Picture (cartoon, rainbow, N blue to C red):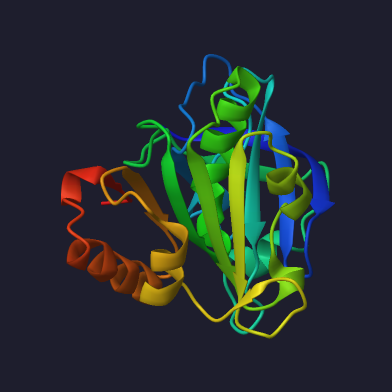
Length: 220
């Protein structure tokens, strides 16, 4: 089912990432980590849907998304960046395999952080973040989405990794050496979301460390 919504607010977060707040259709429900198909309600764009994860509290009166725009090619995210309050969006029904399956290690790359915003925020509200670690990889320090939020979550261990050398942060990517230095229990739950190559590489590392597939939560 398609729902027409109105853009209420746009908040810049990084140089290419914005927080979009839209109206919530009556009776619309989702769980943290789920996503939906989104399209811009304009001629020529209504059929150009892209999947985006909800980053709002399911109990809130509005819906929100945190979306990174890619300016190197024409597409939905590039068009979204130019939207303003009052513009209309089309959304579908919620879906997705990423859900809160308990505390664990959250491994995110770039915009892959979005499913974890809802899950970790819900855990923060309920005071159940203990035992959770966020390993978040980005190209540069200024690309870290919602860094103050993560650093302010009581009980969450945060590890930021950047490819461009930066004072105080780990340099490189999520690889075997980094994971071995961060993880001392390979029997816990792992959550994984990021660019396809990053996901496959990290999944291979987890498999080598004996982590069964049913202990890894990722999009199917």
